[in-house]
Length: 262
Ligand SMILES: [Zn+2]
Image 1 (cartoon, helix red, strand yellow):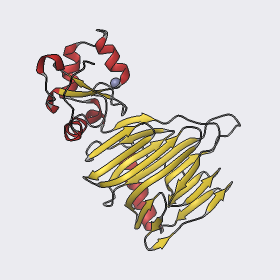
Image 2 (spheres, protein in one colour):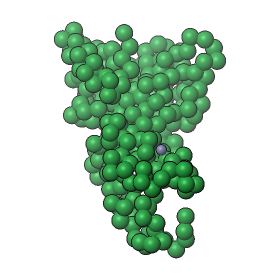
Image 3 (cartoon, helix red, strand yellow):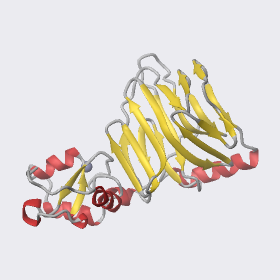
Image 4 (cartoon, helix red, strand yellow):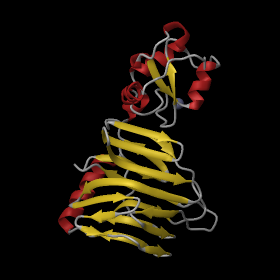
């Protein structure tokens, strides 16, 4: 990286992220750097249409000459996350259960944190044997019911048409628009998962959570501590809704994996 660069504005970075589908243009990984296709030393400007996202691996491959400029240009024209239909990443797995914080509630050693019918909004698969990893599962939508995020066996997928997604340090943030956060998660590996923001509507439930307050429809759920349970918050749906969910999850399942448990 050369010195004396002009500052790359947040607006330019966001345009680049959107254009690349929030992932490395070569592999779709949601952890990345900003890379000038035409070297910055030549153009001396930040043109968002000449900047791509590259993960650390593909950045190194390019810098060391193992990834050709031609392949990079092709990837810039058809970013992998757009082709796949999602950007992805993985949370480190842990052989002990994470403490989950949501809306002033803490849950530990509890596989299902919140479920709507058979769909775990956030939860874990408890390992069959001691020493094996707990696997995280999640499914979160926006307030129109459009999928924002799914997590299956610790692998997260994000829909690329969203306004903005940032995976920085331990925090994953999905924005529906300027100053409108749909999901914000903080994952401390081996320790905790904090749902700092969740605003979704799914199967008749409106879930509005911050780190300190959780509202489900008109009910506030706060200040509870659940440990060694099996289910934290279970929101029932009738048979008709359950069959709609099942049909829908099969339709989107291939492209946008759901952790539906049967
Ligand atoms: Zn990559």
